[in-house]
Image (cartoon, rainbow, N blue to C red; front, side, top):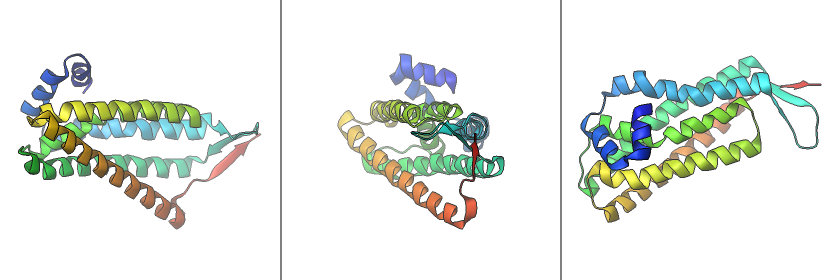
Length: 202
């Protein structure tokens, strides 16, 4: 993963072609890469919300989550990321024939995984919960992922850049729909008792 990502920064066209020609199997991709990358933001946020804590504006008190509620939320977030990557890969493959490309499901999931790598890294900011740090890290991660999506999809799918732009825009719209769906699911789960439990430290 790290070698591929470094290659995407230094010589992206060659690296995308390499990923397309030699994609790992779906099981190997998940067990070897995605489950660990998905755990990065979940584990960091669990630590940050239970050990570091945060202060509300205008208050000197530190707020933390109980370990039980934070563990449940981190586990659900980890599962949501795993499912989200698979769903995005499935949509990438489903839309591919419209644009004259026929990647395998493993290739499509690999593309989704590598495109989302900056967002996984942004999860490191969970170690020190802060709304401003989250906004900055999230903006950088989302922008970086969008760049990889728009620049890499035409090369990865071997289609003209004009078609690649429309294809990438469609993938981005699907990603936003998936994000909204996850937010709605989160609200439902919180209403069923899986929400946060706060601890205020003097």
